[in-house]
Length: 458
Image 1 (cartoon, rainbow, N blue to C red):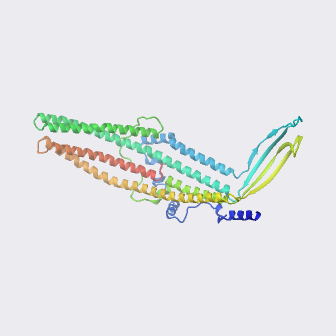
Image 2: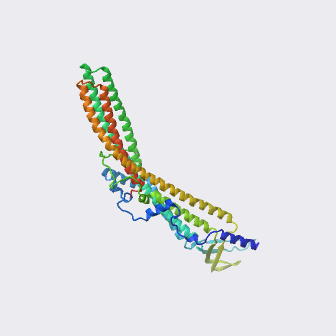
């Protein structure tokens, strides 16, 4: 029996695990191409003028927007919860560090008993006990390192939440700018159509056109007017979204009427890898690999003994089986070495699970990096293409304004132009003007998305 226990203990401690590995510090895996690319990007000297390092005040310069962002950063509950998660992780790290120190406990007790009518004698013990686990095999070390990494991970998530709040407010703000511009354009167009209806009526009375043209002009006027409630409803929806971000009841927020938002850096197509080095969700995913690394190390330490030194001392009147008064001081010292024998199967299962979780962490990191790279690339291409598209639309608007003017003059002077051509020209102009506004908003949204995609918002 003694021999089988010795062999079981030897097999448990061997299990093919290197005792040196449990003391190693985490480092980025060198055998993974994506991780290696990220490591090179992180290792580069940061450029303080690059997009990811710009403060949000440098990017969003509109005073009204800045005031809203500040209010959101002060009041948003999601951001507050992210900050609290950092505090939780720091508290857990503090607890892991304190594991190196002995634990102390004071547990006074006393009692009395009488048997067969005997005199009752009170007994009491006032012990102070201390227990100290010697970290001979890195159990506490790996817990502490894992807790330290968890703090960094929580900080990365907090930065991601901060960036999301800032860019969410900016996105809602510029959506309101767009909708207000669309509403203003639609109302001004409706006034032109209303004048057109009156002109058609006068031309009909003069015998220059027929009732069909009058009815058609009225139908188009009503079509324009019908789009106004939709725009007003969308404005209310975005106002409410902005109120939620600012953690307040629904209300109306004033926005600028300017369409001049742009980032203070040159944007080109492509995907600079150093942009990913500042992105907080990528940093958090990388820290997840570190957490998994230390969890695996902790699973390895389960195969090694635990060494605990304990001491107990105090005052008692119980000495052996006798009760003495007054009491005496006592002290006890002990040491214990606990090695896993019959729990080997459970420890192996824990180890295999930690190994699989480490692989999951690497897979999740790869996915996060590739997704982040796609986000950055999409935003940069959108900025470039929408810039070119808006330039063409502006030329289209210039041409259509002339077309409306010429067509309307020809129709009014009965130069062979039908009202359908006038209607087509005006409708095309309105659609082009709306398309120009939509194109501006798409570019602004892409700029905001790019700033968020590179972890901006410091």
